[in-house]
Image 1 (cartoon, rainbow, N blue to C red):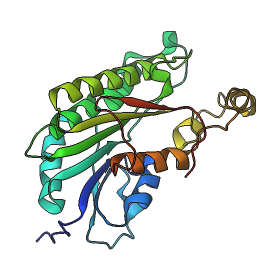
Image 2: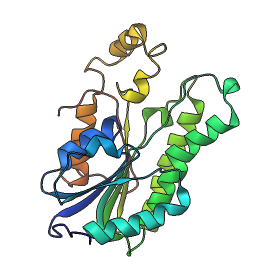
Image 3: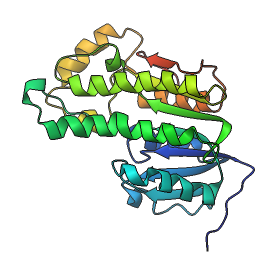
Length: 244
């Protein structure tokens, strides 16, 4: 039997809860909210005993099961007030060296899956009429660089999707947050490219400091809790240091 959580609190879904941004969001939003964490790494949350927190193991590339996933989530925590899509994949190398499989993985993860979650969030069955859908984009969407073309294309598509969904859903809010370069698990895996020389060059371009995960997470929390105003369909660029 499913133990129902406290329905008087806001229900926030974090898709990609074990990643750099997603994991810190779970910590920030644990208090005073009903939280659903969608992740491939459920083991990171084994110590959670709070009945207002539901951890679900799921692969976002399993497109045909996303609708069923959300149906089961709302049975436990009620209709969704906010969904934050934090999943992202990046491969760094010239486009000529990409395989079709690698390009497809980036587009499917960063854009197609996000689009399906956005489609489901448009439904009165799944979300509150005043719900917020927030997707993590990137400065690369509008400022592409060499060796990350598929990633940049996927994020540009994501921002177009956000604009389109806002036109179809005037009461719900569809917004994006586009950080500059962040020191995350994803970027750390490309340390041969994002080395000391890269960071030093980036620092010179960012006199107020390089964007931090804590700063981005703090901004997202304020955004979805409506402490910061944002027009429907807008993606906010974050390319400088933010306070926590």
